Each structure stands twice: as structure tokens, then as C-alpha cells.
Length: 227
Image (cartoon, helix red, strand yellow):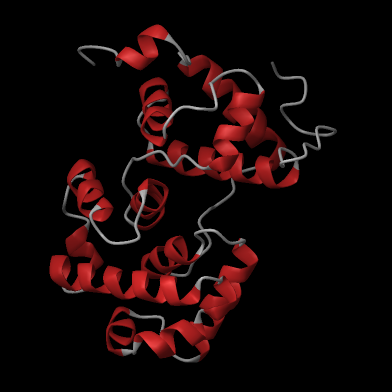
């Protein structure tokens, strides 16, 4: 039992589990289970989480395909490849020099923490792992939480631009809150469940892409008459 509720949730932006679960149920009914994140291995998911920063997933798919064709989509290969060659392979993902540097930093982290053995990395608790990930150059909160949930099977809710847009437009959460506060709101209200955290975020992403764009397309949205 939680001993105390976060001050944020006591005063404002208080979401109840029933509200969020109704949202999830409506999206799940409309779209089915999303089976997200697309990736053949946990390692590929980690690489994709870094490559998808500030770009569309279609661009990430092209970059990952380049890595696969070059037989470089492995811990050992990414540790050996030069930053310059890596940058050219991931060029479709944009900001390729920056992302090549971030991937190399992440490989150094994996080498230091677990020698590239992800099963060893998973032994750490979620809070400890999250702190370690956030200390890696180029890994922000959204990337860290994506890696935790989708690659390492840890219960950490991912907050992205779609989440903020959808829930602020419906007046459930104020859009100016920090990432930490958004995450606090969701993790406080929702039951702690890996499958729920995983699929709920995926449902939000799909809704954001199909309907809750910068210019909204509300017709046919599962949440159109929800609130």
C-alpha cells in the first residue's frame, strides 16, 4: 500500500485508475493489442529507441535495415565499428553523427555494465536501471523508459508527445507539466503491470498518429465522444 500520494496528484492533475482504464479499454477495443515495440530482439529495440529520437519510425526502419544488411546490428559489431562508418549506415534516421555518438556511448555503457549480456543487465531493479540509463550520454527520460519497458521488461510508463497532446486536449492533464510529473501521474493512477504499460503506450502512439496530430483529425477517433 502506498504510504502517501505525490503532492502533485493531491493538488491538481489527479487522474483516477478508472479514467485511464476506460481510455485504455476504448483504444484496445478499437485497435486490438498493438504488440509493440517492433524489433526482432531486445538489443534491436534498444538501438531503435535511440535512433527514433526526433524522427519518424519509417526512417528508423531504413537505418536498422542498413545495419542488418551490413551485419552490424549486434553488440560486438557496434562496439568495433568506427563512429564514421556507423553514421553513414544510420543516415536515414537523421542527425546521424549525433546518433552514432550516442549509440557508441550506449555500447560502452552495455560493455561496462554487463559485457553486452542483457540477461545480466535485467537483474537490476527498475529504479536502479533507470538511473543508470539516464546517466548515459544522449539517453533522456523517454528513451530510458522505452528501453526499460520494451527491451528489458521493466514497469516504467513511457511519456511522449502523443501522450501529452491527447490527455491535455481532453482536459485531463495540463500540458505544461514536466516529463517527471506526467510519468508520476500515470504510474500513480495505473495498476503496476508490464503488459498494461507496454500496450497502453502503444495505443496512445497509434491514436496520436492516426487522429491526435498537431492538426487533429477527430472523426473516427475512439476517444471522440469519450469524455
